[in-house]
Image 1 (cartoon, rainbow, N blue to C red):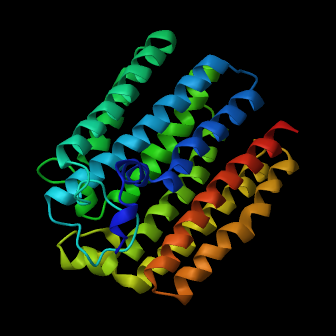
Image 2: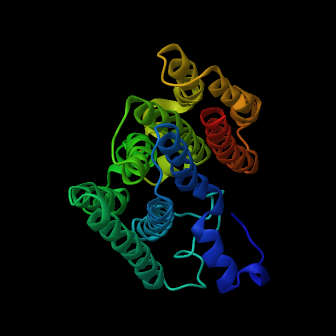
Length: 299
């Protein structure tokens, strides 16, 4: 992506590296998990706030780690369309990005340790798995983000683990409703990554980054996008049919038009800027989904 040199200030570079649009993937599961906890009759606000800090720090850490690792492995090229990468910008030293990633993971680890000591020491195991998975996504000797497993990572850690973990630290139990909420949030978080990898499919293939999109091709990636978005909106229906929530949970379906817009864009355009906009729209859809689920569970 070509950016005017005058705009490449360190502040802008760092903010771009944070990837603000992706923060929806860390806020939404905590919001949904808190709603489930209240619905199930338990709420610990301090624990919920701690879960939010951990989730945000993990997301930022993953974004910085991905920025640094892609630079080191040569996956960032001038042809790439998307947010400016800090490590390859020439304005920020790559080692600074690496240390920023470690610092963010450190904040997540400290927050997770505090939550574990205040709730259940066994959460330390889940926390360690999250930190390890976050770094190995694009780091380490064989990053799984480079072999097509990124979508699975996002579904598990930014869907199931983040949502169920929030419910557990607030309500001190795991319920079927928590699992279903985690699935719904996880499907939309996965959709964000699918759009990201669809946008980068050509440049990733050229640099040997074997994401799921490069492995299965554009057409099948579009089908995957429809499936994960559709699955997300089946979740509230299952919640009602199985008796875990009332009919008001159907409010989530009002987010369908928001999620449909980026899907239509993905089918209609191969333009990088259009797909960047679609990714941001899907992030908005995930937040809308979480908010509507919250309202549906609480009224």
